[in-house]
Image (cartoon, rainbow, N blue to C red; front, side, top):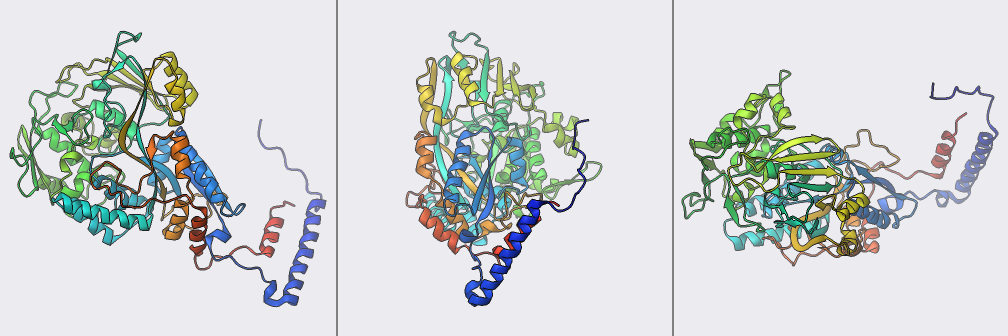
Length: 619
């Protein structure tokens, strides 16, 4: 059978090893003699900083995203040039679901990623990234009590002038701290065939909203929409868990929320499952900003024909709050519905699968009231101007209580079941799907509005860029995910429309893990301590080693700008007074030189290196 060859018998010491030992003995003798003759001058100088000592580090990106791959290569080039041969960077791709798992478990020291907005408010950027216990801050081990208080004060401030001033102060502090390296804020970039109609870009959507789309008679098939995507699987089909764009695209087409966006606007909300958007003027919001009342639309059914009521609304939020996934999106509701929300952890389950929530049903009952079958009231713990906008995010999707309860309800089995099943009121239903291959959506003919023009949507994973381009060119797909560096190719392609120019709130960043999980790490690829990025000097060195203009002009073809922090340009709370980091290798060297090694860390001496070399040979 195929396998290892039998071991050869040992015949004594090899000539190669004997030669190495002789050289080693002579070298050791020479070193010893030099020490005796020169005293302290003969001692090897020990590096006390990360620039001189050097390090090995892996930088990760999600496979299929060629722009982020290039970003990794750019910072690799910059960092390795600081001390060639001593600083070694490995660029590692991970499939999307694996990438998310590595991110959750803290196994990535540095990673390129993007942030698409949940809701159009600066708190959506500051809470996850900078608040102690926030989605990303907790993953990288960042805690700052002073900043926590500033974020909380800004989020609750009702006066826009005061609120903007608070966000500017926070952004200035974060520039100094350099917790993340913000690399690009992109414009919209969508490639479609010219027979696609109804496309309306909204920076809050997770890719395409298929209800608004249709196809002209120029298309061979006007009823089926085919989209060629990069590889990557949805994290979950459950709106209380999924917190990424692959699953988000499915959620926003199968489920619906109380309020939704008006066309291309990121701030103008319209009623969806509610009959109207509550305001102080119409009595839906209390004068103190603590109570929100929604009248639920009657006559709406889930796709299985079950009527939707206020009980479904409350149940949808209760199951998310009680589950309280620290890596999920329900922080945006918990933070203002549950007192001392960040003191509570994720629910656990007994061996029998019975839920043991830290956020209890009683706490949810105090936060959300079913006034009657058509009315729901939310009771906030503090004023929160962004609350209505949070309800338009996918996490606010209304699920069928009877459907969930029939398959496990608030048990481990129930949450597991909903991770691969959907039951919403939206214009589409989930059809068949295959991991690493495709997702199908079928028209919901029971939809409470006019049924969608498209009968079927096929979202296929096509890893190769060249294949996606060819499929789009040949008309085999109606739209495709094409990297921005192919902009010129697309512009010259007959029958293809490139939709760009509209500003997005999507920002890309380099995450720097201050609390690295080194379990199972390969020291040949990453040999830094777990708190390597806890040193601000190291973070600043990385910030000045990235070629921002090269990335934006060449890789992104000028369809982006360099952010000056977490809050994107065009959003309330953005300040142009906040500086940006420049690509400056001399600064990077200075910062890395100032980053001192932990106590007890030393560089290998010449003798150590010789001994290690001998050990690498086998007898």
